[in-house]
Length: 98
Image (tube, rainbow, N blue to C red):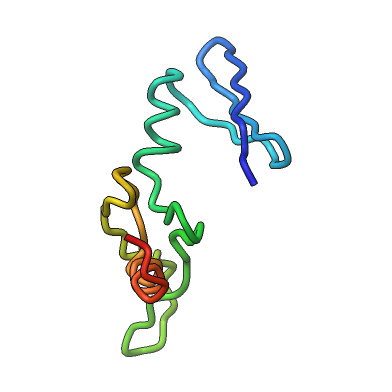
């Protein structure tokens, strides 16, 4: 499944919408938006797994919201550098993908 971005510009806001997905309101220039969505996102490029949220529990059982970041590693596959989760790297090693 390939998603194509459709960008519409307004005064100080960029709205990115993907075919088949709801639109995402993002602030900044178009270059900053592309950098934010594709380069700095903590999402595995193979499995699509990303950051999860949950509770941090103190000794007195007080719940505080926190994020669980995915363990991303940069790896070359067939001459292309991709950001993969360690689970995806293990799976690809098991399937012998170089």
